[in-house]
Amino acid sequence: MKKAIGLSSAFIGTVIGAGFATGREISLFFSSCSLFSVIAAGFFLGFFCYVILRISSRSGNIFSAFGFLKVPLKIFAFVANFCVLCATLAGSENVLHNLFSFDGGAIITAIFCLIVVLFGIKYVKNLNVVVVPVILILVLIVFFRDNSADLSGKTTFISPYSYASMNLITGGFLIGSDADSVSKKEAFICASISGIVLTLLLVCVYSVVKNVSAEMPFIEKADSLGLGIVGNVILYLAMLTTVVGTLSVCSVNNKLAAFLVISVALLLSSFGFGVIVDTVYPVIGALGSAVTACSLLIFVLLNPKFSRSYILLFRPDGSLLPRRWKRVN
Image 1: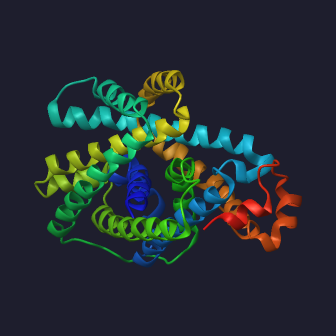
Image 2: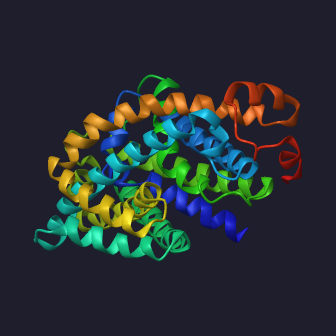
């Protein structure tokens, strides 16, 4: 149970990053969608979380399961997480300036998160276990203060699937890199917690930012309700969890790599939060949709009944033998 809570906190913490907490990515994917589509996105996130954990537990880690596609997938995962890292650092500059009226917030964020990552993945999970409940409480405060919710729109599964796929590449690969000993029960608990909490957060943020036109719509609405400080605190906590999660994936827990990645990301963050999110996130969502489809296929084929088909399609290395799959809980 403790492991499942830690993994779900890590997954949730990476999903609710700068784009989520500012409301910008919610507006980007769901501005014309109905409430049902937003709920569907939460369900997809929980289900995809379960898929990644089960694949990882059967193959040792998420990348090994993709066989001959392992190298291209690692490259895409790195680029996607790196882009999210750049956007989050750019956003942290704005948020700390709003809170304390000084420049250099991105540097402070980078240094703090680098220290957390250097101490190891268990500290990443510990940070999220503390931060995620605080973010949930603060989001609910803003939600209940707002009385202008507009939940109308078209019902579609394209936007929810694309949105969940984008987050599979960040949060999913973070937990998938450390899930070789996760049982089926633990995977189910983790996925259930993640799906429920993320659905609740999605619905709250969606209802608040619907029809709000601003670079950071959630912060804009919180400010109009007299909760500007609360909104910025929510955002910064969410940014910390995302920077830590994406940096962990990009650096593969290598200290030198972590330092180099965070240094380059700081330079590229100068392009600005809005530009990076609007340009990169839809592309990550589109490409991530293909990765998700491939993950779902692997999830089915890793059943010992389809071992021949799996080996034929993905040509994994010799470490993936049917008898290993049968030993998994």
